[in-house]
Amino acid sequence: MPGGLAANQEGRVLKRRVAASTLVVVVLGVLLHFAWEWSNESPVVAVFAATSESTWEHLKLAFWPALWLAPIQRWLYGRPPGWLMATAIRTLVPPAVIIGLFYGYTSILDTNYLALDIGTFVAAVLTGEYAGHSVIDRHLTRATRSGVLVLLAISVTAFSILTFHPPSWFLFEDPHATAGPGGAAASVRDVLSSDFRSRLVAGPRP
Image 1 (cartoon, helix red, strand yellow):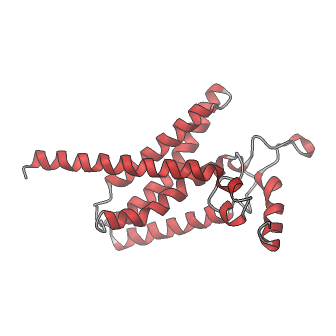
Image 2: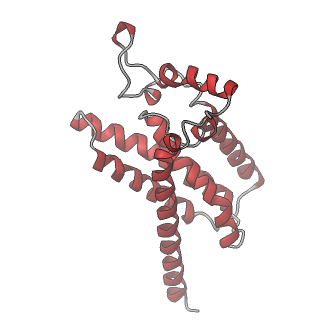
Image 3: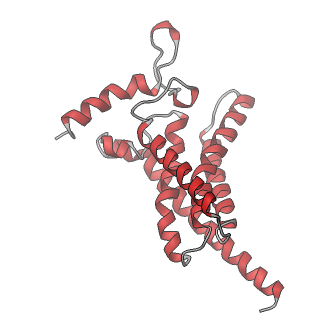
């Protein structure tokens, strides 16, 4: 196949893969937005789903679906050499884009709008999928693979535990929480952690 035709074919494949992956991640992310309530506030579901309106909880909606899709992509794409790097990019770029776009537009408008929040989420996922798929056929050195594995392990750990033990940081503040003593808005830790600990001990509701 001539070079130009091959490049066009590769471009079409890339676009189809990015579009399909973006659609899957966005749909799963939307479902995860409500999954915690649907599960009767299950602590297990809380690892993956949004449990408040804090920014951190919405980052999970982009991270986990992209990670879940990764092994399926590896199988469908025929074990591409850059799959591990692509997975890291697909899971970590969207949260970074969400933070940048959300705090960027809210600093200008001094408030947030649902339509812009949804657009931010879709744009972030699309950016991550395009960037990840663009490197999926690149070969990685052993050192690079090791570094990417460590980064993914740290990210999985953080997204798994920080809902239950959130630091006192702006990403973890729930803008809809009521103000506590001293006038500061309650954080996710204030609203959720004690309840989660009691549920983990007592088990699910009957």
